[in-house]
Image (cartoon, rainbow, N blue to C red):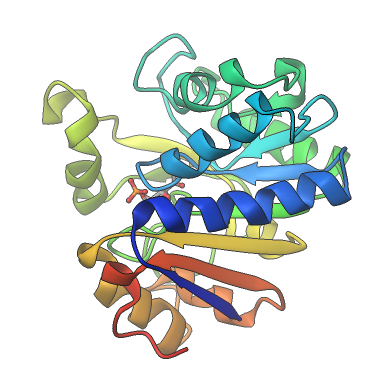
Length: 243
Ligand code: F6R
């Protein structure tokens, strides 16, 4: 595993953007696995800047997002499709037809999951997967539990995760209780993985995930078994982390 410890969030975002830019330059028709949440916003801003400067071309890039709330439409400003449009897709020359987010409105859970697995398979898997890290060790919405779920599935969000995400909603009642998420198997099959972490509040879970036992109780711990993981963080998140 490679670790980049940056002075602050902005520099960490630039490093993550460097890694994504390198992927796009080396393979213009690559498949990016993308995440939402607060952490990658700075990275996406940096990618937009590079696109505007003429240094990056997204015209052949495909993207497959990790997750989506069940029951939210793409127009709902809390949906992850809306987030991706707002924070990246609307500002670069990616073809929206080539961007995939689980269908939060598909009432048939099994169909939603099957369709998403097929999307991942049809693209030949993911070249570079971007991940954030939940305070409870979740990746995507793979919550702590008894097993590593391999494929796309529907999850009941833990109260911990709903509370962490409530900051984006008008009230706790509006935070959805379920979500579709890519499984651990699909994430682990990505050729490369970049995990971005920021802030003191992530310090403990970063250590647990990357130095502790590999257990589904800390879903991100499975990343210790991946052959090409890069951890990018700011000092606040990585100060105690050995390099
Ligand atoms: C979002 C996602 C989540 C977040 C995680 C960290 O698509 O998959 O696993 O990466 O909850 O969120 P932030 O970055 O808001 O701390």
